[in-house]
Picture 1 (tube, helix red, strand yellow):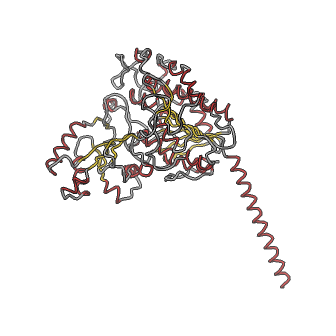
Picture 2: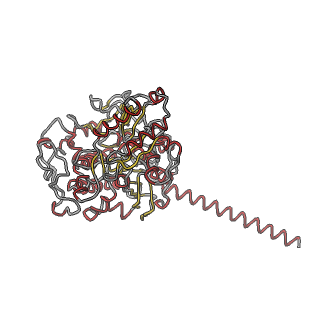
Picture 3: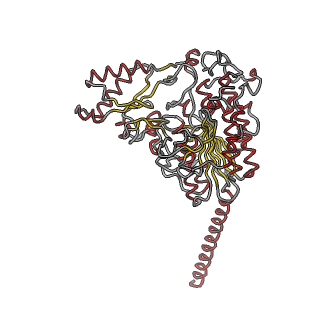
Length: 555
């Protein structure tokens, strides 16, 4: 019996060791597969103010090599949302690349009131650096106010700074924030009377020769041209009438109709900014991105590089004409062609199947409230002057002074804590009293206090979105939410910034190496993007990341 027991034990050990060897072989194979998945280049694309329904509304007009290529060959997250407010450009780009919300990364708006400085600040400004490529102050920028790392930072840290990160956008914040703290370069377009791509001394002391040559090429000037529709305007059945009261006007126009060919658009030499408000701003961005791809040799070796591109003209057009305009439809059809050009350049310079790409937006947008009202849908505008006067009267009557409120920005009221203390008032009670007062004003949906943000953990709905946007050191004391369909804006064009679903629902498409084709209607959130890319690359998550990797996207 002892002999058989020894044999049994010996066979068990052999089988155990064989199983271990098999597991190790599987691990080795997994590592081999990982090495094969790692792309030569990651491309991040943010389309400014792109609602999800633009993808579906205009789909039949798109060619096969732009948006359709991403949808049909990549992975489409159909239920993707921003999980915080305010939904604006600075926080949007930061959240995409940090995998965090403003509560963590600190970019709580494009501009906000800084309680420590007692001054309004801009999300990317930094006067400790100088402009490069212009004599104006348009280059005095850095990512200093972003207090965590980005996926672009983590990639550079992982490869010992040997890879390159280049960030490009018409808007400075659309380049500076995605580039992170360690970008080799971030470039943005300075219009005014120059029409040049510029940067900050944060990145370099002088522009590379290829950027100087591009600026001298006359490319920007070539886009100061008449804007007519790409297709016959009669085919644009997915948008409203061309001549209506819901759209803004270029200087010199008498009606918001095609073609747009005013003197300001064509001949005004002091106004290169006009390009930003047409789809040609996206074309110029594409030209510059392709030039950067080629001149910087991105994706040419085994060390992964990162190209971050933001298309900003969609936002300018949306603000002027609104989400239901012929202009917005034409802008997206032209962007589709620009994307196809960019993808073709990536195929040629990096290699098809050798790069990974994602496309999303920094926020959505509301339908023009005047249009909604004409369709008998609840909507309207906030009378800020009237509300401010009414609040001042309340403050004076209740507390004897208006000084108790120090500032109002991004739908948040900032109280003067010193005044509250000197009046021997309880801060939490003052917050509630002011919140209750404001709730009675026209157009108000709900109001929350900083005390609620500090002492509760919300997991769903509007309070969840507000809390994710609430930064304890930077945000205000009373948080105001307007009714759905209501905005503080002019009566033409679209706006964004709210926690409402029209501002939060945006596209999210993944494509390329390591990405499994398909789609999902399960909810995904903007902070999920950076962790997903981090898992694909096998690198650390950004330091403030609170998103979750979207596992169904990955092969």
